[in-house]
Structure formats: C-alpha cells, structure tokens
Length: 362
Image (cartoon, rainbow, N blue to C red):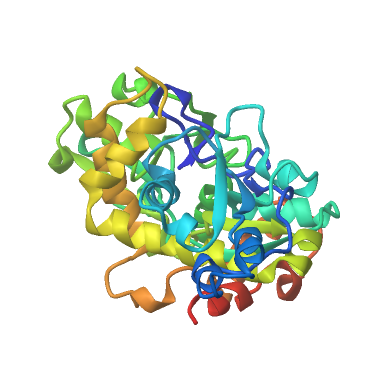
C-alpha cells in the first residue's frame, strides 16, 4: 500500500489525506535537446556550443516513501543510464513520514512527484498548481486478508466482524466496499484502527486486516501463515478500487518543460519495463538506495514481483503503460467525493493529462 504507513518494512504507500503523494516542482531549465542531438553538431567551430547543449537538465523526483521496490523503475532508469541518455540529471528524493510529495512539488522543492490519486485530488481542491502526467499503477494493491477460521469467505461475511485499516486516508476503498454491501461501519461491523505491523492480525485481535499485496500480505506469509489458510478480498474485483502510484508535476514548471517531462516519463517507463523483465537486477538497484538494515533483498524481490502485477496487469497492453484510464480516474474521484476526501466533484479534465505520455511514446 502506500509506503508511508509501513515504516517497519520500508514503508508502503499511504493515500494522502493522510495520503499524500506528490511531485515536486523545482529545478528544470528549458534546455530540452537530447544528448544525441548534441553529438550531431560539427566538431570544429561549434564545439563550445555542442558542449553547452550537452549540459544535462536537472529534474528532481520526490518519492512518497523511502526507497523500496515500489519505486524500482526509477532506480533502474538511473542505474542503467536511461535518464542520462535523454539528457537528464535526475535527482531521486526519498520520502518519509513528514514529507508530502504534493506540497514539495507545489512549493518548488521538486519538479515531479510520486503519489496516489486520492492524495492528488484534495491537493488540487486546495488550489495547488499540480497535474497528473502519468499513471504508473493500473490496479489497486489494497486487499482485506483474513484467516479462513474467521469465516469471511466473501465481503458479505464482514458483517459483525472486526475489520482493521491504518486510517489517515487509507480507508476510503473499504468505506466504498462497506457501502456496496449496505454496511454501516459504526453499527454492522467494528471498523478499527490498525497498526503499521500485522501483529494485531497475527494475534487474532482483528478478523480482517488491510494489506497491500506487495507489502503487508507478504509479511503475513513470511510470518509462517500459509496462503491456503487465508481468504482475500480484492478491491479491484469488488469494483471499489482507487488509483495509486502516479506521476504528477507542477503546472507552471510543466508549461515550460513539456519536452523534459516527456523525456523523464519515457526513461522512467523504460526503467519500469526493465525492472519487470529482470526483478532481481531491479532489486539490486533498490538495495543500493535502501537504508542499511531496513529491509531484506528477499522481501524486496517479492515486493517487486507483486508491484509488476499492478503496473502491467495480466492482459494489459504494455504499450499503454503510463496512460491514465478515464474511467478508473473518475471512479477514484467519485469515491473520494462520496467519503469526504474532496468536497466538490473533481475537475477531472484538469486533474490529469495523457499528453506527456503520448509525447514520450513518439
């Protein structure tokens, strides 16, 4: 899930209202010539000019949480030189519990941010000059996990059960799920705050726990519980999923740096494709950035494998990686409004654009 919630594991992503995931507006520059273009200049009298055009353009990327496989594509793009090939010098800024990507990008501390759509929407409603330029995760990673002994074979069986969530902005998909089944979370079941570990679940203090497929769910399996002894309720299958990891930029920066943004997105998607093709190598890139002792290579490899399923779901056209699906974005916006993430209907036509992804595909 969002990195913000699970510090003990390298952190998941947390939706931001809490949630907050954001790109930062900052350095950039208008020099959008590629390295290839620079090297085509004649060598004689134009050498000084060629040297000038070869100067890389700095782009600052703000992550929503600490380095982990959730962001592997960006580390791979950096390690493999994909950003450099585009004439970019990308600085990847780690997130943390006190960092809100949207605020960082809106304030100019970063040019582009990684966040969740449910975190971007309230930031836009507050007037922050932001716009989504790519949707990296095409599916939600949030599930409800329960032990088969709890008897929760479907979402309809949640009635009368104790259901946990980290709250702070991460609860909206579950509220939409309860609403679908006509459950009042204050009467028909016990909706309780869940800690950032899975101890409550493992200790049978809650019947169903929130978990990200690439993080908490794996923690449960790593604790010794077998997958066949668990039941899982998937928000995607239930039709209440909300879009998660995206890329967003400061509108003012983007207006003058569309080519730079397109180069960044192109290199980043190339990095994600490489990470999905070779998870082990991707994790090597992640571990170079992760704080010593904060995680294990094995956990990150599992995370990378699960993250790949969200970025490139089964049957999804890889040529559409990075595109924002209008229906999925609208569903996220509708759920956000219904449960108070935003007060007014989102101006979806202004909240995201596929222009940059389309430019990157050329």
